[in-house]
Each structure stands twice: as C-alpha cells, then as structure tokens.
Length: 601
Image (cartoon, rainbow, N blue to C red; front, side):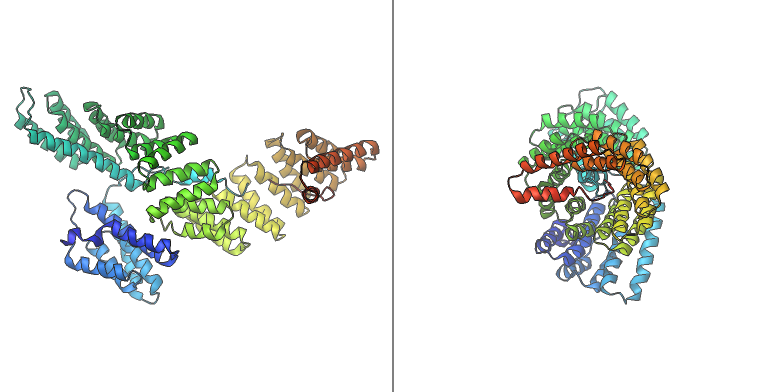
C-alpha cells in the first residue's frame, strides 16, 4: 500500500474514531478529533484538485499513524502542524493544530511563534490567490428557534455541494471515455483530429480561467458537429472551474449547454440546480431538481437538495416530505437528517428536530451545522449546558463563530452571570457588529439587569435596541418598564407612547400607560387606558380588575363593582374548566388580581 492511499489519510478512518469517542460522551477528545478530521478533509480536498503539488511520503504516514494512536499529544500535533504549514501548504489547518497543541502545552513558546507564522502565511495566501466560492447552505428575548435556524444555518454544505459537482462532472467524463472506447465517430465533415485540437485548446483556456474563450472554442466545435458526449464533458469541466472561481453566470451558462446537449441525463439538470440555488433563484433551482428527480426518482441527493430549496422558500411541509424521501432512499445520509432537523425546528417540533440533529451527528460527527442546530434547539428549551456543549463543537467555523458568541452571551445572561454575558457580548459584537442575534442578546441582558434591580442599566440596553431597530415594539415596551421601575416617569411615558404608536391594537402598552397615569394621579387618563385594554383583551380578568380600580379611584362605585364582578366571572369560568380544585386555585393565584404588574412581552 502506498503512502498516498494509506487509511490514515482517509477521512472515514478519522470519522470512525470521532464517532466512537462522541458516542461515549468524551467531549474533550471529540473536540480534538474534530480539528484533526477537518485537516484530513481539507488535505483530501486539496489532493483531489488537478495539478496539485502535495506529496505524501512514508514519513508522513508514520507520523499520522502515531497521531491516530495519541491524538491529544501536543508534540505530535505540533509536528503535524509543521507538515501542514511547510509541506502541504495548508496554513489554516496548521494554525488549528498549533492552537490545539498550545492548549495542551501552554508553556511551549515555540508554538506561539508558529501560530504567528501560520497566520501570516494565511494572509499571504489570501492575497496571492483568487477567492474560491462554494455554494453556501443557507437557521421576545428568546429567539424563535425556526427563525434562528433559518437565518444562521447554511443551506447546502460547501464541501458537499462541491463534491456533487465533481461527481456529476466525473460522470460526464466516464460517458466520454465509454464513447471513445466504442470507436463511434461523428459523421460530420470535420475531421475528428480537429476536434481533439479544439478540445485541448478549450481545456487550456479553462485552466487559465479564460472562460469566454473556452466557451467560444467549444461552441465552434459544437457547430462543426463534435460528439455530444465529448462536448458535455468539456462544458461540465468549464462550468465546474468557473464555479470554483465564483464566476456563477459563466458556470450556469456552461451547465445549461451541458443540460441541453443531453436533456435526458440528470447531471446537467442537477448542476444547474446547484448554481441556481447559489445565485438566489430558488424557483429555477426547484424546477431543475424536480426534472432531475423525474429522470432519477431514487437519487437521494436530489431529494435532499429539493428539501433545501423548499426550506429556503418557507414551504416546510414540502421540505420535510422531501427530506424524508431522501432518508427512505438512504437512511445513512447525514445531510438529509440535517435538512430534516432544520425543517422540524422551523415547524417548532423541537424534540423531533433534536433527534434528527443527533442522527446526523451519529453518522457524521464533524457536521458543524448539525451541532449548531442542536445548540439552538437546546437553548430554546432552556437546556443551557447541553446548548453550550453543542455550540462548542461547531469549532471556529466562520459561518457560526459570531452567532455562537452571541448565544454564549445569552446563555450566561440566563445563568445570571452578568459580567460573563457582557464579555461575550463584546466579543460577539467585535466579530460581527451587524449580527441579527445582537438584539435578542441585548434583551436577555436587559432582562437580567431587571432581575438584579438595575433598572437604569436595563434601560440603557433596551435603548440601544431602539436606536438600531426603531420599530421594535417589545424593546420600547421594556424600555418604558425599566424607566417606570426606576421612577423616571417622564421617560417611561415617552417609551410607552412609542410602543403604543407602533402597535395600537396591543393591550400591553395600554396597560402600562394606565399604571403610569395612575401613579401620577391622572385617574381619568388611567381609566381611559384600562378601558382600551379591556376592549382589546376582553377575556383578561386582570385587565378588568385594573379597570375596576381606575373607576374606583374616580369614585364610580357602581361601574367599578361591575368591572370587578366581570373579572370574577372570568376567573370562575377558567376554574370550572379545570378538573380539580388545586388547578382552579392555581389559576386564581397565577392571575393574582390584586398585584400591580408592569407588563412586558
């Protein structure tokens, strides 16, 4: 067995080791193995590229085999990192290994210098090479789980999508090879040898990223009667290379011609679907995938991607059905489980969504999008420790990094750790100042400050929200409540007024305005506010009780007694619906009509 094909360089070898430790709940080893597996996958991807210069030797094999047996060894991690840096030219992988080694050996000063060297090498590599863009997978102060999963989870995994394209292009090449082996020759007048010259020119222009030039040569060959099997393979390679360089329009054009040359083959339709999805044309992506599914109804990947598009357009029922169809065809398809988890989360079926995440993770422990979803779901269910562990296992994936920091801030706030919550908030803002999770994080911290009785500080956080999102009703309401509790009644009234103007049909603002007016002795205004509240919320016993108090303050005894009787009748109705006395008493205690309550969402 050559070093090139040694099992230790096969991602599945490390995936199996990772799965074994993850199943034992060994989070320490799991995190280490996630980083090592990420490096193996990047190495595998780099070696799959044409004209790569990576040479794997027997020495490398021996070193990686030693790492497999002792993966928490900082010396081995450092040596492997040096190979990634100096020989494999993968500085981002090297940096992760150096970072990990330094966690195990914090006194090793050489590692600090190696971290800097790897960072500088990454910067140089980024400036020297064109950006390669893959198809990205589009996930109250408690963010609604489906919405967060929708906003923060990629739609199609970059590596998975790139692998799909490679597989499709490889299929065209296979057909091209079969065609050549049959000895069939086009009957057009153009000599076959001329096609070979033209195809060679197209290939060279494609590698030089002169996609327009390559397309022109291929169009000329097509016009001259070149065999369609040959043309399909070269157009597919053109599309794939354009895709890798972020030239989506040229990629799409090439794949469309590939499809038109062979409308009966699914690869052209599938590739067009991937690019349509990348450029934000979900209707066209769906049409392409559905035609591919018609041609190959038992192809699990097609149904998985159909699920992703349905999810993107918000049709969660179809997204669920398509994901389940993919899993019927291939129960071990981790990506389909991940798509199903996203869909179930969006439908607020959280226990099922968590199970789907765990199924994906069991099959592919390094699937960071599933770990992220699992973190969101656990956070929504207030399983804070489980959420934190899941978020930790997303690693330093840039897609999730800022989101995870914001979630950590909210987790610390719920745990009552204000200083830690503020520290994580600061880090998260530095990572992404425009992240949509900033607002929920500020609300969590504001709520914690309220619990601690630090109402002015709470008001400051809510005010930051209103500056960024002036139409956030709940922020204005909470800001008013914070000022109200701090006895800054003028500012409270202004904030409540803003909330009421934003949602005049919402009874909460009218309730708080009524309390404020009553506190300031404006009893007629208080009555008007509570009257508006009962009109908007006629089944709210508490609202009727407060309305009665406001009438009592105006010496309107008959009217106030009528309001109180109405509140009592509502409580009696609720109590009669309960099957036992303890439940009825619980309802009465929960309403607690005599308590003065400033309301927030």
